[in-house]
Length: 451
Figure 1 (tube, helix red, strand yellow):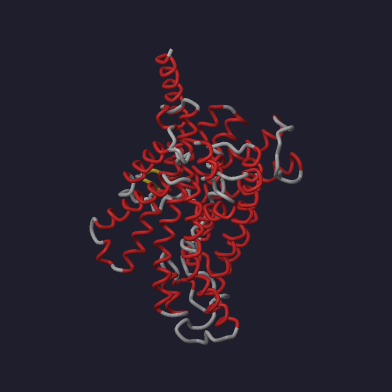
Figure 2: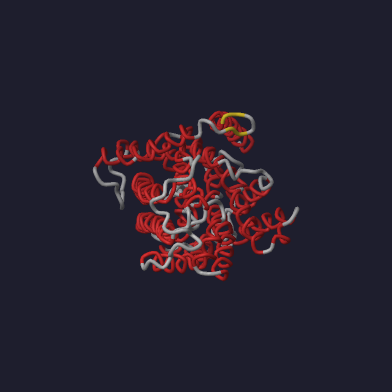
């Protein structure tokens, strides 16, 4: 009976696409700094080319590994199978460490946009309570199961993007018909150079951050209907959706003539007001709250399966592996929710470089696992396969690895807690082997106590 209920609670293709979209993107919110730092032409070039060098190879890799090894825990299981338990644990550690710097951002985004509706609602400590409410509501939603999260993501996707559909349509129409004139925007800004002091390297890092997370959906493989068939389709479909929902709104506001230097966080609201009217600006603000909530909700589903997989291996206490009848690892959901709630007061909005370094290291391990499994297990059934044979698999990881290297170079001057950002990230990563030794010791002690 429990198995039947768990089977009926599995995600289908469309909810998987929507959940993946939120794990990666959450809409055009977050692109403003790319426009302001790089200018329109460079921003459009970045948003068009990065998917080819970063998103497409990563989605191909995820499509092959998720269909060949559709296990709960996703990328942790891939790396462990290919490289052994130590490196599998490092993959899990890097991903969970990155989540600390990533997950605190999204409730804050919700609060920032809610404050635009009515500043008094988020004044003082009220903002923290709203952020905590987001964590609690998402935990309750996740406890209903992966299917509930996926189907909810479909609805949130439609609500989130509807204002940008209007903004894009009106902006393109006004721009292509020449109705922008030389009014408030001072004519087209497509050919203008970026503002003085613009940071193109920083724009590249922000672009990578807006396109990362393709492997996150892999951790719920056992909660997806027909994962061998649906994962490759979901990855490629979501990659196209993310690129389109980034490029088209940006092209629309560029054609209307809004100066690129006016773009910074939250500028989509001002663009909607100028291009269409106050009512659309209000809708964009509401969409910003959906952005923060939807991303946190989908990513919670993803990250909470990693401690569950570790507990199944005995590297965490067995209690963490407890599931509900719907198949949800409820102890892991509650533990992760508590950890992220405690991090809400920490200011992580500027720590994209830390997130990129930790996530990037984990991603490189996944590309290595792709190649190693091709060599170790050539007979492994692969319903979807990266084309080009072994060298095709090797080539798939070249572009993302080079971009991660560029992100490391771009972050060389940033500082966190008085330390260079790269040193800080290296210290977090270096703690992984120590945590692994402690986990192995705990596993041995639990085994001896049971004996």
